Length: 111
Image (tube, rainbow, N blue to C red; front, top):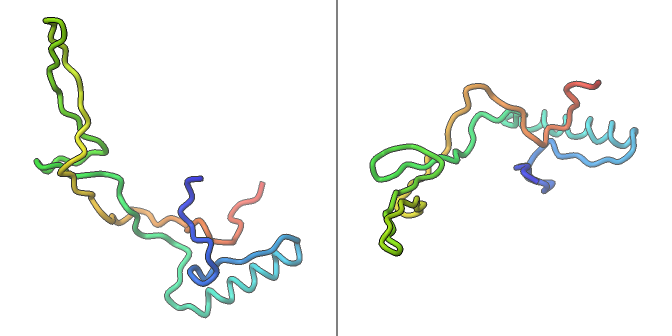
């Protein structure tokens, strides 16, 4: 849940499979050897898709709301209505610090 990694074998050069200790070592060595054979492959992620949106005025936020006045039984009440139309996604943004891809098969720290 929440992971954005790829499970397909052909997409990511670091994907390896192994269940036992000997098999996992062999799989890690094979995946690292595969990574060396792809000169452009790197375990780092430099960009990500933003979850922010621009509205018509150029404001940037996750959600936009509009205040509406509802009259019920002669009483006025203010309600917030969520705006879903005319929003433009921010798109792909560059990360300040590179992150490690979720499918990278090396243990970084063991406690």
